[in-house]
Image (cartoon, rainbow, N blue to C red; front, top):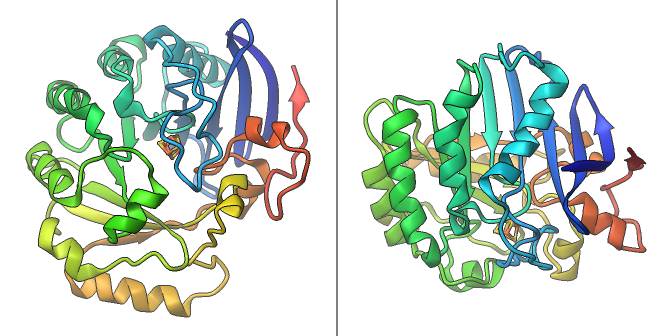
Length: 314
Ligand code: SF4
């Protein structure tokens, strides 16, 4: 792997562009959450595919799918980030998250399971917490079976995070946003209900909320037990794809009234709700969820509120 570019700042987030195979680029990131020091929380976000075949309407990483990364290629991104800050491979960070969430749908790449099995022996990292976020593609059924096993074997008792990105409770709109054959809410609930064991972290249902996308507590209650599932609501980050599909964020990071009413309704239904606004600067860096610096470099036009940092070549 050869680093060919980087952008961002070390005190918030930094993205790296790397040539993984001749002519084939990936990108990966590291982030902290100011004012929490890196010694308490450090997040790595790595790619599992060259591009992504799913093509979610809000995601700049979608399209241009060029195949899956191998386990060694995924690990090489993690190795690089660790070597920069912890060359001894002793990662003394209370919460050391590794998210398989930059480019690619992890459930469509079984090498992710191999990586999850190898992480604990590869690094001395007592705070290690892998995080798998998925849109629940039907073709990932075998992956999910193996994921439940690896969690039980190596990460039980709250050391693993599983997230399903759903974005709306309306089936037709969800199909439009996430154009892949995928589990319906009942199937996600059945899998998640069995995946969760006492002591585990609750399974996250993520909604990057766009205007016009319903999030109905009564629909959720039909399927998801608030004892096993929590809700995470995020703004829709600025991406080229969101603009193309005329999607605008229902959550305004600056205003609070609408979001409080929505959250109150979900909390009254019994759910734990996280409103995750994140660092606005991450939008400008292009390191936020759904963003993709390589897409920005391909575009000729700037994008309002995003990707303003220059990319330095290495
Ligand atoms: S959000 Fe995930 S699954 Fe959807 S296109 Fe982006 S990388 Fe692929």
